[in-house]
Length: 396
Image (tube, rainbow, N blue to C red; front, side, top):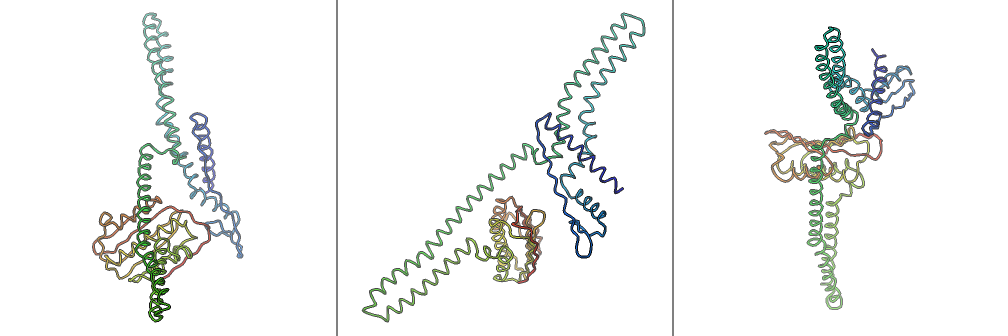
């Protein structure tokens, strides 16, 4: 049974290679396979071989186990195997009727014509030959006309199985364009709104304080010679105003991109949010390394919004935040034991989170039955900067 797996793998791979070559030669469709590499065998200090999936004592057993695991897990190999199984049925369904029409027409002409000539009656034989020849030729003609379309349908199915990313339908492409248009408009609108907020905060906050400090310093300059006590009081007020302006600038910068997020990464930034929150929050982070800065910022502000919602609306006593990276996707789950009843269509907070995630092709799912608990899951594709593995767990 185990020995049949390499044979089946060889047959499926050869069959898929033959199909790809004919797709290129007949229809000009280039399908390049992308097989994942076999993991290297590593031997530990105990003498066991690590296959990338499991440990084995014998080298041959480790090689076989590595091959079996890789064959099952490799997406390209699975597509080859699927096409190897479906290929005969596809030929029978699409090409079989056309071939049957051609062969049936030829056999009909030969069999009926010879039979009529063998009866020895010229008139009847001529009529039978003409009738059988006409029907047979019609059948052959129909089969030959249908054959290119049958082959096209057969190889189109092959292309959909062997290269699904290259054969997106028109409806899929239309939906994708619509989605990208909406997310781009949301991103542009969010950016414009963020710029207006920053401008308003600078104008109403730090800028006003700095103008007031400048006026106070001018007054101090005039009072230094006439009333030094009043000048000292104004100088103290100017010092306090400068400290407040500096704090407002720091808060503004923190709202744009928190320093702890830039310096320590998503995990520590979320822990800082948990420590500043009003409810006990348990944070679990399992990230091999840091995502892109834009993804980190988007996820951070989404989690911040969800924690704020839990504090204001859910009456939760405990919140759990889980951040995991699996199979090229970042998954964040925020759960609270509050009253539940949240809906995606109610309020602007969850819609804003959904739009923010949509910019990165992310998705948002919500489960919030009346009485709780509320579980909100965010998932978006991302790439990490390295493959170091670090798992951390913290409570706040």
